[in-house]
Length: 404
Image (cartoon, rainbow, N blue to C red; front, side, top):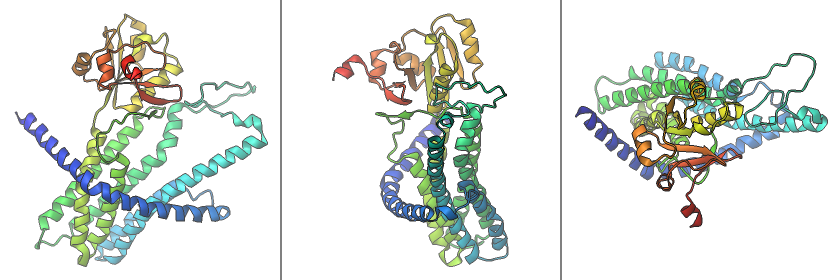
């Protein structure tokens, strides 16, 4: 009884938040995108024009660490009763959050240019020194000396570290500031409890989001998830990254204004607008998506099969591999894979919607050339996707749908 009431309550909240996203946030994002697009072009031109003066130390991670350290003077200034300086620091940190993205894209382009120049000078150096998940043609070149090769997992962590630390450092700055701002709320006055509840909710939401980020980063697989074409997992009017951008703007601008006594209520308004976005951000992170793969087609568990399983796991939060025939050794080997969450033995050879609902499976994933192991009803329900050789996932259509 209590669980049903809680589910209905959350469903109501989700509906209200979705209405808020469609009516308030979506129009706001047009102005937000126009402003930051112009700022991005200006900063990128500035970087390109001063390319020779920019040292290799000026990286996105350096900016991220530098702006995070500013939490110390901000907290000290707030404790000493200052308002203008900490407010300006918050705005500076928000600008730094945007700048590190511009710098990150700048260095990606610079790296490509350098690799292209090196390849032109020495064609033999064009082959990567370590195997990557994108290169199935990698071969060990005999050199007569030991060669160290970086694993897929470590390469993936190195590739995604910047985005991870950027998001975590955002929270490492703003959460202590909000805790300090709790002590600045007047003991009497209008909207006193609204201020307390707004800050407390944002603190809890960002701490929860940070914990989820940590878990997602250290449990991620070593292969990036494939791009999806012709299908959208989200049913929301606003994409996840756009929710994050709007939330970040409202939180930082709101915090800067909240620090100033004469603009406290204006800042509270911005922070209050960030509350539904913080809720939606956490909800999307904890939302489960169960993927299913037919394991009976595997003859052996080589690096190509592991890559496919990792790709599928990257598309969802849980990976189930089913075996319709008795392959004890293969089943046990699959259970030993870190990217596999569950294995179903004696699974049906042809999956129908009833089986998917019973097992809590959201989508069935196959690869190009696989025999159809789902019913046409399952295909019509758009519950099956196939990953092509170009690492792009597309909806798998029935013969009738292809004819139409």
